[in-house]
Length: 220
Image 1: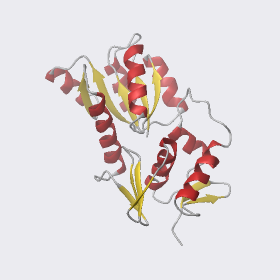
Image 2: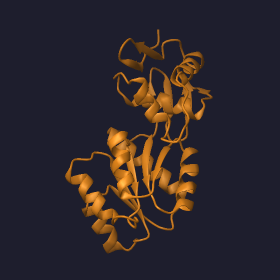
Image 3: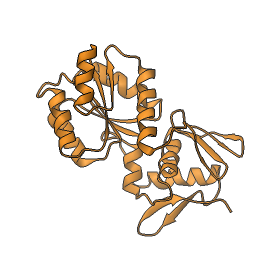
Image 4: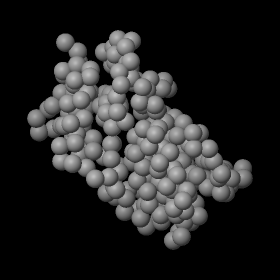
């Protein structure tokens, strides 16, 4: 999962970025409403984590504007404005969830994964396909009941393909799922991860569709 974090406190932002990486969540961080607008115009994010006390604009104004123009990403407000009336205002402005500060990083990760499941229309934490089971939140995977050790990037890529429901995803789309704005990405990095998945699972677990990208494959 790739999210956009809109938070002007750099210390808090660094902690969130580091903590969510361990929960299979890629974070793009910006510190203002203007930077958030630019980031959303250049990449797709499943969830926006939004602080309200931004330096250039109140976060509620940004939230309302995003919803008015049809922004489909889920929004989790993360704010020091944590009283019940303030939470109600945020939810009525278009937020899908609301957490007050201070907050627990584990709870934040759990809420983000819950928003992802809700958006995908599934309730279960585990995704299944042809004897393959994957828990996106932890990266845990098994094939026919045997645990498979996957790296964080491999589990990210596999989750993206399993959640695509048979659709092809381009290399750029997969890079967007695995890497943030600040990550240094080699040109062949997706092919390397796919090679590892094919070796660990089965040969055609990822099928290359010429001119389109990649999709999840069936077992022989």
